[in-house]
Image 1 (cartoon, helix red, strand yellow):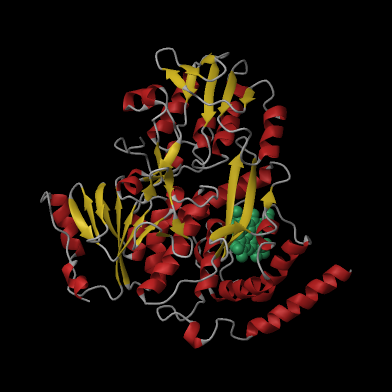
Image 2 (cartoon, rainbow over the protein chains, first blue to last red; image 1 turned 90 degrees about the horizontal axis):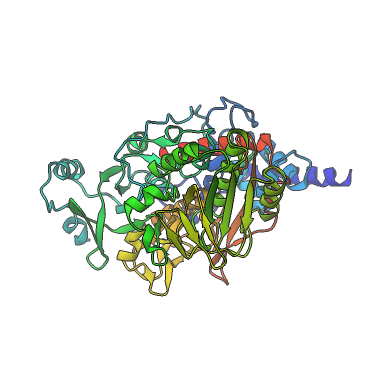
Length: 141
Length: 423
């Protein structure tokens, strides 16, 4: 039980701190993108390979978890829910095929900032991309 | 800032109609607020860089992509075309959504030269000036040691199928035509090469087809490396257990020569005749990276600064994707990650600011060991200021075993990375 108490302590800590602006001082914020810390937006963007651009996973409707139809949508996720899941992946209490390998490599501060980042993204329902017939002239030498 | 007006236009060399049309489309009354980035190559790296430059500069950077092909064909999942659970038309996409959604300008053309002093790119049908250039040309095959495979005709007979497209279709047809009891010979080139687990995944895909359709056949895998170089434990187990008697894996076997007429490969140890022969040649940075002097003589990959992916050799030229000497897996996910770090850095550099001093990203490579079973290797990488490289963080690793669940997640990975790269 000690472990889960520790998780809850962290969760509460992270949630309370995530209410405060974590984006950084005004002078650190890049002029052309006032909303997002550019360190965290690159990290968050690397999640897109599985969770879609800015957390808008394709083909899975509004599902917040992975289904047979597609991966979990992170855009607009509740920041506390996100943090609990990520800490669970680190700890082993959240079931995972691959996410523990990602969550364990991140710092608590990064998890905290990712929670804020994804909770602020607008959810857009995305359909899978339509494939095409390969044209004869396509080169591959 | 007078270079903004000087470089304002494309000079039509051949005065071809196509160029003039694109030329007019690019004419601007006003200069772009932050400048122009030209991207060479519309693969995972180039397309992603173009999109995120537009997104993160809020449209203030003008982005022009130069890509020779009209369509995008995904290398990830293309081994499944060989196995038969996908067709090439499941993996082929257009660029229209990407262009339209982000206002990216596009030229279907082939780059012939880069003048980094004058900051100009020459193509078959014109030229372009740039403030910063991104070179994302993928890989080039090195036929120095296998000159008999250098021609297009030779590659019809002995496909590499290591750039997805008609080569993949060709190899699948040869596999289908192979008699039961036939011998399929394939190789793993010396690392580094595109997609480290790819050749081993290919062996599994071929075997999964043969096991059902031609059970008397076998696959000989000649590995130029001393051992399986990715997901070793997992692949070793699958080869031994799932494909026992079908996959004959031979480490430390380099191909020294090929007799095309008899489809015979020569190694240091023996000569092996094949019914179907698939040689994946040794690799180096894409052609344009060599032409533009982005590689040094004795090392065929591009050295970059990992905060911005700017070449260590040529100023204002950034290199992305498989051409980069990163010491990390040359994967599609990695290419898109590099593209995002680079786009982020360019947006800052063009605004006169320093790029993020500590980039971090996550990478995953899935491999399908059958049509319904897959496994992964996943890692977080962070910039190490001492080593000046991206270093694997703690906590990464591989699947415990291949599973159907991960095949579903791997398919979802593909859907998401395609949508992220191409819309």
